[in-house]
Length: 172
Image (cartoon, rainbow, N blue to C red; front, side, top):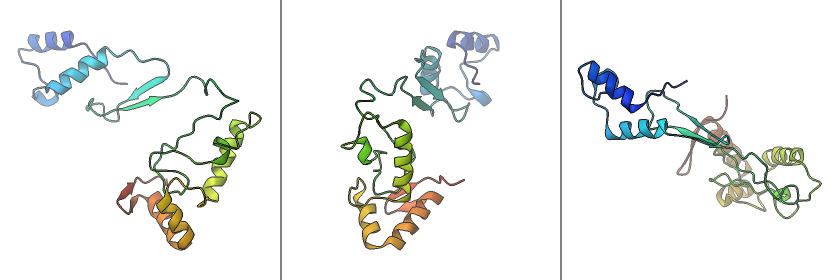
């Protein structure tokens, strides 16, 4: 848990210690550090948002997670929005995480469930569809050279470049 304290208390503590505004190790706190500290102290996130700091000493780098508290107003008549948060080399998933799966578009029916989507996504990973691509480069490689496609998939999962795109390691 990050212990955050008010700037007034920080200033008061520093003045009683006889110093100026300083950060860890006696260094002066930058304007950015002072501002982010103030912003965090005043932060009032809704229940659908969460903020994480990978490094407790670096408040300028954080991850904001926004989760819907509902699947969507039109669900089950409209399909839910699905996004892949992990960058993957796949013909049916673009580099922004958009997923091309027929049951999320034209083949959606209100009788389909979230379970149907999960199985559809699992099948899509096992059997990519180069005929309906979002990542046209990956689809072309799959169609023309399946062995190279498989090598690219393995390289991307282990972490590495495919062309000019870097894929972070996602294998454990």
